[in-house]
Structures are given as structure tokens and as C-alpha cells.
Length: 200
Image (cartoon, rainbow, N blue to C red; front, side, top):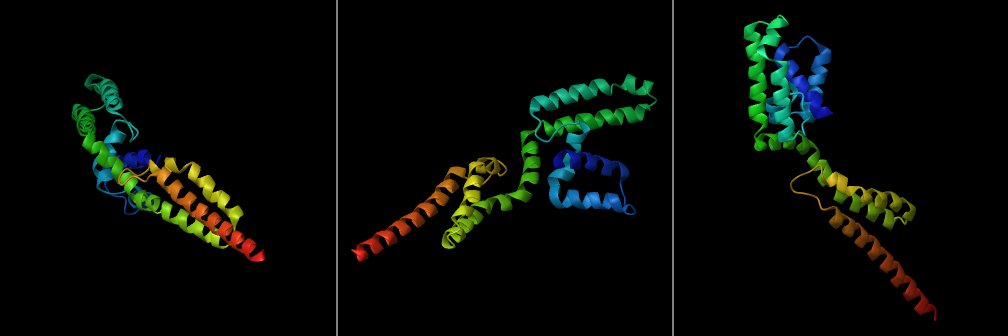
């Protein structure tokens, strides 16, 4: 949703040019720049908005959108709606420019990277945080709290898909957490066995 909205906002910003006196638009611009900003949004976001496409659009989607826009914005239709020939030409130039940019897979990949990267560091910290929480719960003997950690592991693969490179291995993370728990259980068993032997 953020990508769609910021792409549309980028087009709006192009049209308005400056909104220094509008606090609301400044706030929107701040959110877009902070959470969905960067070169890829500024350069490619408007193209998705011009073609009314979601950022995950395939090449086939892009071609269909270009054809649809070409029909909707045929010069004769625009002239009948009172749009000048100059503006009609400019509208189709924008459509064609958007298509030429977005048909390049490198452009689409860079645009996608521009949105995933802000979250990449957070996602990459998940394994460290899970291990830290697991160790803390085990040390405090808060075994009931481990249910939340183990529950989060079930959907970990969904989070892994948010970061392309380096890709987080959900199975590896689950293995690390399970290894910590297994090590803790083994230590308890060893202590119990040792105490039992002493009692004999």
C-alpha cells in the first residue's frame, strides 16, 4: 500500500512542484521520504502511478496497462474532452516513457530494492533477537514464555521473503533456536542425573 501511495504522491509532487506552505503535504512528504524514499522512488515511482500499477506488476501487467492507457488517452478522445493537442501529446509521452522504463527488469528490481532495504536491517536482526530472547527465557526458567518464540518460528519464512540479499534461512534460524533449547534440556538432564547418582 505504501508503495502505491508514494508512487501516486510522487506524480502529485511533480504536478504541484512546491508545497512549502502546506503543513499536511509536508507531513506526507516526510513519511514518504523517511519510510519509502530514496532514488528509486523519485525516479521510478511516478511511472507505476502513471500506468496505475502496483509495484509488484509483471511485464505482462505493464504491457496491458500501457495498451489500456493508450486507448483511454487516444488523442482524438482527449481533444473531444477539451484537452489541448499539446497536453494530449504530453499525456501519451508520459505513458510511453513509463512503459519504456518499467519494461526493463533492472529498473523494477532497483525499485523493489529501494522499498525492501529500509526494512532489511530490521529483518536481519530477527535471528539475533530470537536467540537472545530464547537464552534469556531459558536462564530465567521462563519456559512458558518460550511458546511465543516457538510460535514466531512457524511464520518466519514469510519474513524471510522481505529481504532478497543476503537471504535469511528460516530453517537455519529454527535449527539454532531448537539447538539452544536442546542444549538447555540436556544440561538439566545431566544435573538431575548427577544429583541422582550422588543420592545413591
